[in-house]
Amino acid sequence: MAVDESILEHIHRGESQPTLRLYSWNPPCLSLGHAQSFKDVDAERLKSHGWDVVRRLTGGRSILHTDELTYSVTGNAEEPVLAGGILESYSRLSKALLHAVRELGLPVEIKEDAMQNGILRHNPVCFEVPSTYEITVDGKKLIGSAQARKKEGVLQHGSLPLIGDLTRICDALVFESESARGMAKERLLARATTVESVTSVKTDWETTAQAFVKGFEAELGIHFQRGELSPSEIQRADELVKEKYAHASWTERT
Image (cartoon, rainbow, N blue to C red):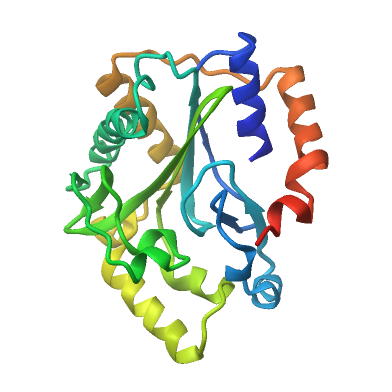
């Protein structure tokens, strides 16, 4: 999370270019949306599984990052891809995501006008219900995304689950009873899916990453150059960890 924010700051100062970053997590980590209460987290259960927890700069609800590809898009708000409001830029990026996942052979579509039930909207699990312009398969959410528009620019995060049991996230969150936890797991399986569940084939991370690059380039009419973090970006990311992301004052806000 600190790396993504560091890149955003460097782009704002003209020291870096608009960036698509693709990565995975080790160990698995629960990420909370910017405004989400830490009270949603069952800290003891989280620790028992050996999972980490972090708070994102972007909004939305909880995601357990494991067995997935995570993407981040970072750039100035004046960039053609990111210009306009949240929904306008979100729509453009969703079309790129759609193209990318179709490269993997998935019959995906964009949820153009998601209606959120008032009860589900307050559920701590991100993948339980699709939002407008998110990617679905047969009505089940496949990619969860969230965007932040700051004075430094625009950052959008997203998560594509590749394999594994999506309901594991419920073991890291607080529920009023074990019955409620079980019901949440059932709802999640009914409303979200993974690449493997759709294709019955295990798709590896590198193949997925290549599909993302190809899909973004084709849909958005851009060309990427593979790069590494600059020494300055690495230094700033380290500072942000010490100043922000490793502190309870940031992560454990209620």
